Length: 128
Image (cartoon, rainbow, N blue to C red):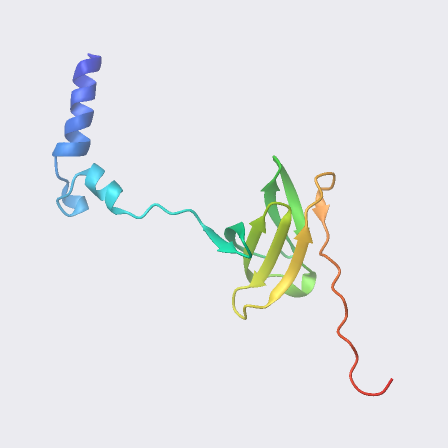
């Protein structure tokens, strides 16, 4: 019986064309698709790429080191369409519409909530 099932599986996936696949076999249709992982090479590091939307509390949730972590973005950005780049412990959160970096994190495995890195204020212009 197992031999009959293996034969059927081979014929179905490799020999019999399907109308819904433009007369290709499932194996041909599968191998024709590009296989790619969402990642980029930037600053000599491998960054994972993820698209998300900031929740009403101003956070996004990611799984890191086997646990869910909540990254603080800020309530001012709730509902914002973002691109999250992750490389090891470092993250960059980018507004998908404007391309502006809206948050950076250095993940701490002992914490669930991950606050943003503190940004240095811009120097004041003009006389003090």
